Figure (cartoon, rainbow, N blue to C red):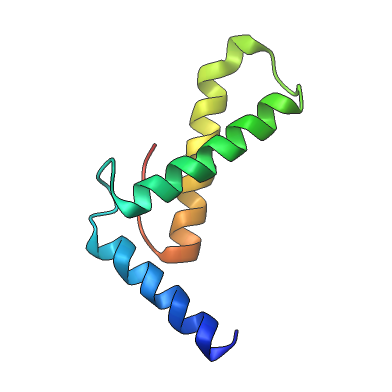
Length: 79
């Protein structure tokens, strides 16, 4: 990773940590929601599941977003 990208990434990570990532409406939570909705939409668009499992899709999408946020920014977020 280039030095400039690493610096930018660290700035974003610090802002997420400083803004209380577990609280709805925080900077990290907004990223979480965007990622979760992309996962949700992708699962729904793939017609892999029946509409009956809508709540399960939501849970899976939020879990995927939480995993991404932890891996990428080392912050804990929940859906």
